[in-house]
Amino acid sequence: MDATIIAREDHHVGAARDGITDFALVAKASADRKGQNQRKEEKPLNLTGMRRLGRRLMRYVLRRVGLELHRAAPCGADLGDDLRALVRAPHPVVLDVGANAGQFLTPVRSALPHAAIHAFEPSPEVFETLQASCAGLPRVTLNNVALGVRCGEGTLLEHTDSVMSSFLPPVDGGWEVIRRKTPVPVLMVDRYCAERGIEQIDLLKTDTEGYDLEVLRGAERMLREGRVSLVLAELLFRPLYRGLAEPDAIYRHLRERGFRLVTCYRMHYYEGLADAQDALFVHTPDRPATKK
Image 1 (tube, helix red, strand yellow):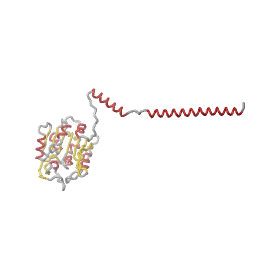
Image 2: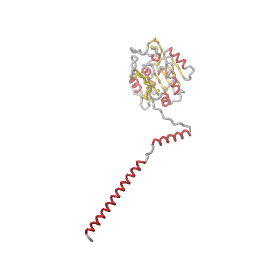
Image 3: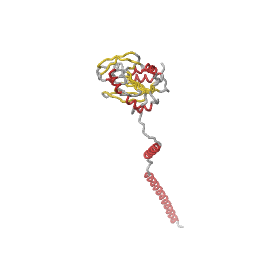
Image 4: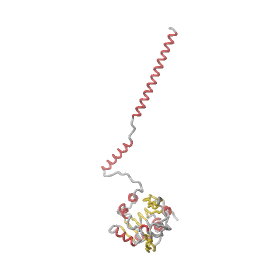
């Protein structure tokens, strides 16, 4: 056979093989693109819809057995909810120190309907209002006395706005005016509990316009022995009274006696700065009180 013909045949064969190879590569590339397009067209799992369906199914199952599913509010959103969650005693004991006209009684009785409440209001005039607002209420004991660090007598500085009355004198430029000075009897939490046979306080609330640390010092035995479960104390950030306890002093006092801060409520502001707030503390048995 002619060498030229053989060379040409080899050339055509090689070209054919190259064409087959090129066709295979093109086909593979086309298949890859098709697969990619198919993957792009595939919809991801709708996890949000699945979660929503799961919640609906769970609610349906719970309703069948007489239960309801609700989202729990964060701690600190509502004092009543927190008290219902933290107070375990079926018949809790509550001390309302600085009861004024009974503003705290309504929410605490709503949250703890079986509680025995001992309210303390030293002003004779305001105490009459307290008596009228609590007339006929069961398990409510009213006391026309103040609570402090020692038993005896103190001078209550009664302001034109009764919620501002205190044993402490106001600073210059205070909100209200002192209209009279009233001598009032003063007891201690420890003495009151001993005389009444109260062995456990489930909630000790104190709102005495800067005098709250003295109230807590008068509850030293109950606090040290772990006989107080919760403390709700007013923290004053603005120096409205001479000699008032700073918020960190109240915090340290309770912290050294085995309490931890749970949350705070109702922050009030004055001229763009923190003014006052209520703080809830819980006694933690795993953290024993600091020994002196």
